[in-house]
Length: 383
Figure 1 (tube, rainbow, N blue to C red):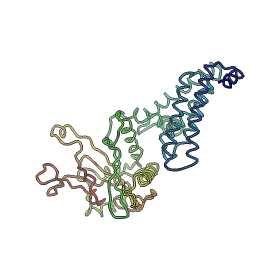
Figure 2: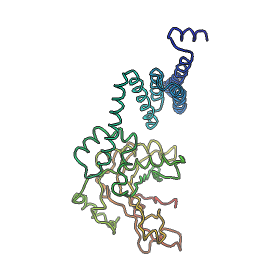
Figure 3: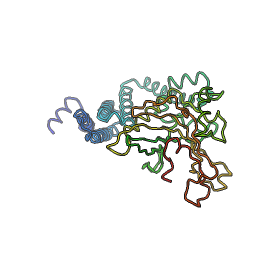
Figure 4: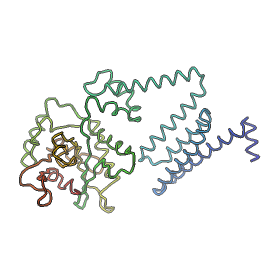
């Protein structure tokens, strides 16, 4: 105590301010312990290191709440968040992004407090202007978009809008919300068995507010970025698909133009990274069996029409799902067969006569599910 009092006297600090600084430094020290745990590197320490970093941030955060206008406390908060960032497993990118942004915000705030009041107000006003200009670019970005909007959104505003998650929200009702997209992964093991993973699934999300569900839903929209094909699919792909129709027919209710979607380069990279992540994180579900390949379907979940609602059609009826086959990947995310005739085409799930997929006597279940033919496994087997 005497040493602390002498230190505060030398630095010209009151006991109250020194107490706040000390609390912030304790939080930074705890976050630093998480970094040390990561340097030791043991998989069993990953969770402990991340929790240690979060605890350090909370302790320092309390100190920031006590003196939010103190640049020193904010600087300590920035260092604490940065330490927590390096103490967290790099694969846990969502929480690391949060920590990195918090470190940057605290650091910028600490610098702003050192500037004259006029300069500080100008800087904050410019940031507010940047934010609302970004929202304007989000509103005007649905196709066909102005050239200036395309340049500003892709080069200036996109990182901020995507982190704040306001880009899609400001487009969603402009002019009409469309059907949601779901990702289906059929995971094959070296033993020849397969199982399905579907993202997102509300039943698997524990967040009571549903924020995690909607975040995961945005993952599918990242993959739903397509190359415009106003004249329909390329001729060679159309011929290859036509020759394959004896095994898997075209969808009888849709035009050829509507049955083909080729993801753009960015979406193809995202799909490959998703497949790699699924192979690494989920695997086959059997510890001793490696992943051989993963078939991925970007599936549109069609909304029911008024008559269907009136007729009591199940909103989750298999025919409400329209799967586009977007690739067969190995465990490293490499496309195994770029010449697959079904690549980027709908694999239809339709109703047809004399093909009951449900129990005997079940009404309305005359489903012809060609995903089962294509994948060799039924994506609705849990039903």
